[in-house]
Amino acid sequence: MKKDDKFLIFLKDTIKTIVIYVVIAFVLTQFIVRPFRVEGESMYPTLHDSEMGFSNIISVKMGSVKRFDVVIVYIEQTQKYLVKRVVGLPNEVVEYENDTLFINGEAVEEPYLDETHVLKQTDNGNFNFTTDFGPVTLGEGQYFLLGDNRLRSSDSRVYGPFDKSQIKSKNGFVFFPLNRIRLIGGNDR
Image (cartoon, rainbow, N blue to C red; front, side, top):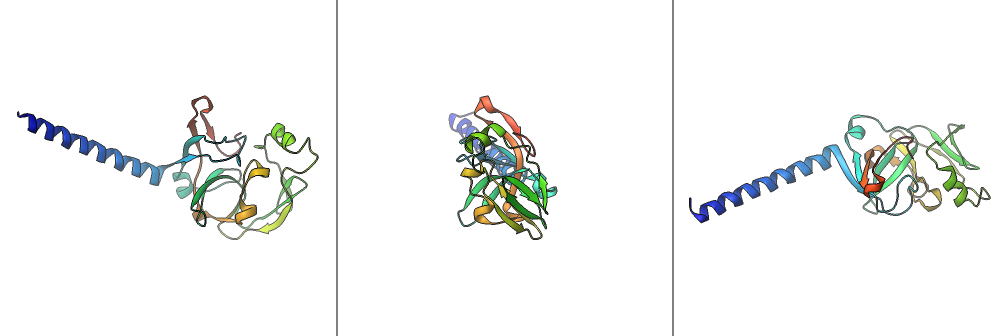
């Protein structure tokens, strides 16, 4: 076999391998998992700035979005993806008063909020962690999303309710930095 033939075989195999990897990456990131990178402190302490991971696309497309799921949402006007938490579901009335979440007029516990962080941010409870808002009536297919770090989050209080079509994936797995590898989801902290 000539040297040129060996090189052509090597080149052909390399191109085939690259194409296979690109197709696999495309299928994975379009239909199975969505990579994410946290930018900012809006989900602190649940998620930290610059953490990276994957979230589940399939569970949104084939399943349902539940209260307290962590979701990746796309905001068309800014062309950005944000990570937020679902607090209000379709056809519900959402309200916040005196640091209490009300759904359809009934108080709802938020077990994922870190009490130490909340107290530190509110000067030991001298002011509210979540400013009062609402009532907001959600329509069919609409969700109300909040960041876990309410004082530093642009969420449904700024953008309004999100349609299900804007929710691209939910929950997931943080893989970087290596010392913070963990699953994230519904009631996790």
